[in-house]
Length: 326
Ligand code: SF4
Image (cartoon, rainbow, N blue to C red; front, side, top):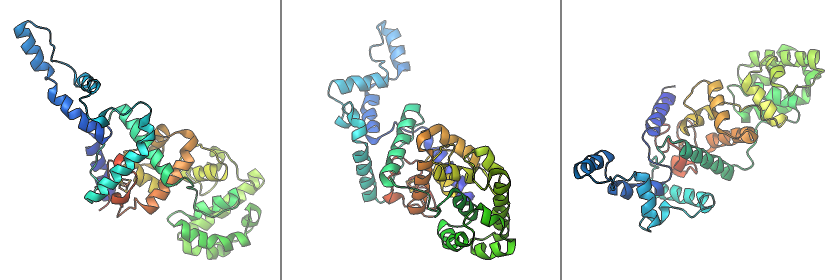
C-alpha cells in the first residue's frame, strides 16, 4: 500500500506543471519563450513610450511565427498528417535513447486536455503494438467454465487455476453437474487455489442458482450476473467481455489497478472508481481488449516490485517511468 501511495504521489507531482507532449515540442517552446517579452513588462514599456505593445506577443503565437519563418527546429512543427504515422517511430527512438541513458526521464508533465488525449492515444497504440492478441489467460470452453475459473482466480494466479480446472471440469463440466457436487469433493479439487472453502461455496451456490433461475445457462447480463454468489463486478466484467464479447465495463484486477495509477489513467485506489476513470478515457469498443493488454503488460513488463521501465515501450508516455516500484 505504501508503494501505491508513493507511486500515486509521484504521478501527482509529475502531472503538475509539465511541458507539452513530446520532446520536440518541449524543445521548440524554449527559443520562442526566450524571445517573447513578458506581457507585464511590455505593457509597462508601451504605456511609457505611447506605442502599441508590439513585443508582447503571446508565446504560442511567437512560436508559430518563428516556425513559419523557418527558424523553429524541424521537429517543432511536424508535417500535417505525419504525426500519427511517425508516432511509433518516435516512441521507438525515445525508448532507445532512454535505454542508452540507462533510465527513463519522465517527459510528459502536461495536464492540457489535448495533450492528455494524445498521450492516452499513444498508450493505446503502444499496447496494441505490444499485445495485439492479448486475451484472457484462464482456460475455458464455456461461459460457465469461465465463471468458475474466474471465481477460482481470486488471490491466485491464472497459471495455478489452469492447473486445477482440467480435472475439475472433467468431473463437473457444467452447471447441472456442478450443482450436484458436494462441498468436500469440490474443496478437494480446488484446494491449491487458496481460500478453497469460500470458493467451493461460491461455485456451488452459483451453480445451483443458475439451475434454479436460468436453466443452467450463464446470463449475459450484468445485473443477473451480480446476483450469483461469488460474482462481483470484476468477475461479471470478465464473463461479459471474454465469454460474450460484450463491452459493459472493464475488469479491474491488481494489474489494472497498479498500471492505471502508474500510467496516469486514474488517481483512484477503489476498483470501481478506477473503472469509472478508465471507461471515461478509453474507447468502449476496446474496453475488454485494453483490459487484457494492461494485464499482459503488468505481468510481463510493469511488474509490481520491479517495473522494467528501461525496456518499456510505454515509457515515453508514462509519468512513472523510472520512478515506479522500488
Ligand atoms: S514499466 Fe515503467 S514506464 Fe512502463 S508502464 Fe510501468 S512504470 Fe511506466
